[in-house]
Length: 221
Image 1 (cartoon, rainbow, N blue to C red):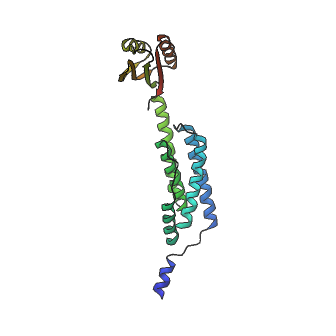
Image 2: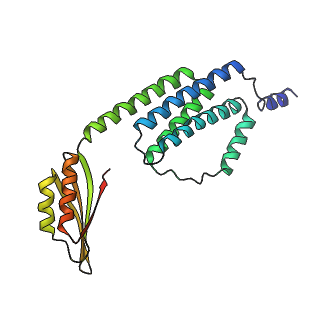
Image 3: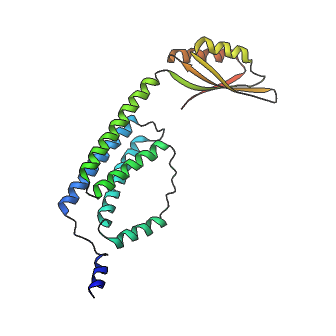
């Protein structure tokens, strides 16, 4: 009988202190809010960063509440595994950076849900500091404009020699990557680098005067 009682006791839950819960959820909101500020300011995503920043706070809070509920109950833990096997997320993560921030937000919720305040605060502080430092370094390294230039002829093939000479007059670096020609229409793909935005504008005006070509500039990652 005692063995049976011990078995059932494993599926019970321990009382959670309301004060500890309130403190942990407030710390979760505060820490996730700092994460959202860093993401809004230093994130490189093309999506609506302010909207996703709000989602990070909600994700951390939800994770924290779930972990607080199930951490002391084997039955609830098993139920959570079953529930997660049913739920499917249909919205695809468009950029790896977004996935990284999602994992940070989940880690915040997991840590405070497990009542590991010091570890979470110290860990998140290092992560945020790393993000800020690397973002500033990347901005300094990307002071030059690095772009992908695509040029295609409309009525006749592109004069590659004329295009290359024109690019060299305004670009600090020109790297031809690909030439395609089909049905008397050619297309060039190049990696180009500019020392200033003024050089980019001057090149755009010069290419427009060549006639019979279409061109586009795309940021190179």
